[in-house]
Length: 348
Image (cartoon, rainbow, N blue to C red; front, side, top):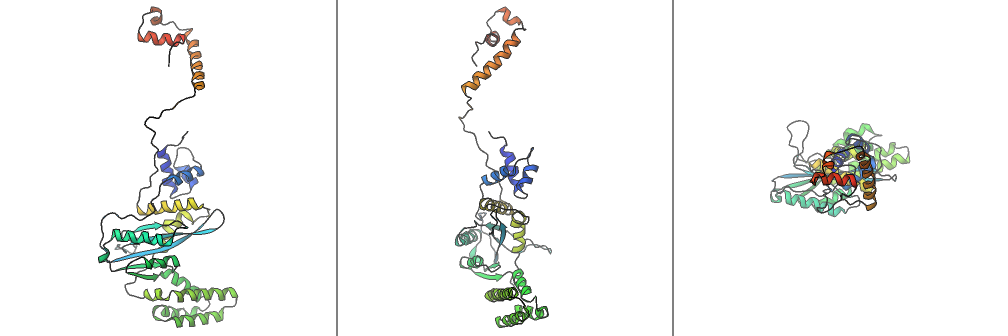
C-alpha cells in the first residue's frame, strides 16, 4: 500500500533536517505530504550517535573540547536540555572569520549517562590522535557539572570558563554599580576572590528588592565557585570558546529558535540528524528491498469478478466482429487464442 517512493521519502527527510515537517512536506514532494508522515519518515532513519575516527592518526599539539546545551520546549509544556560537545584543532583561518580545524560534533540522549558520553569522546580522541604528542586539551564551557565531569576522562586536561558566561554574570552583578565595572574587570584579570566579595557587597547595598538581592548572590556565587577556571583563562595562550555560536547553528536553528513543541523521541532523533549533517555524515533513508520469491496474490473472488467483467466486454465486441482467421478454421496459435477469447475456454 506504499504510495510514496523511498527516494521521495529520503528527500523529505533531508529537507526536514533544516525546515519544519510541514514545509518539508510541501516543498519536497510532487504533492503535499502531511507533517505527521514526514515525522514518521524522520524517525525511520538510522542515526550515527558516536564520533567516528577516520582511521588515520592525526598529530596535534593542542586539542579543544567545547560544550554547551540548548533549552528546548516539549509538547507537555516542559523544557529539556539537549547537550552538544565538539572537538576541534583550533582556528585554521587566515581571515577574521574563524574556521575550526577537523571539528567533530556529538549530541547525547537527554537521559543518557554523562560518564558514557565522556568515555565516547575520550575514545574518539584516543583513536583519532597520537596522544603521545598531544600536550594539552582545553575543556571550555559554562561551568555546568556535566561539562566539568569531562576533566575526569580527558587526558592532559585544562578547564576554562566560557568568557561569554563570565561577562554575562559580571554585567548582571554590576548592573546597579556601573561605575565599578572598570575596576571589576581588572579584578577578573588580575584580582582575587576577596575583591569579588567586595564588589558584591557594594552591589548588594544598591539592591532594593529581595529578587535583586537573590540575583546578585547567584551572580557572585557563580564567579566565586568557578574562580579557578577564570584564573586559568588569564594565561596568554588560553583560547576563547565559541560554544554559543555552535549551539545556535547546529541545534537552536531547528529545535528552539521558533515556537514549537517536541516529543522526546522526535527531539533526540532530530538533534542526532542535525549533528550528522554538521559532521558531513550522509543521511540515508533505507530503501526496503522486496523479497526475491515474493509475488502479489489476488483473492479468487477478485479474479472471478474481473474475468466476468472482461469476458462481458469481449462478448459484446465479438458479436459485431467477423474475423477471417476464425472463419478459415485453421488451427494456428493465433486462431486458438482468439477462439478462446471469443468462446470463454481460454485459461489465463
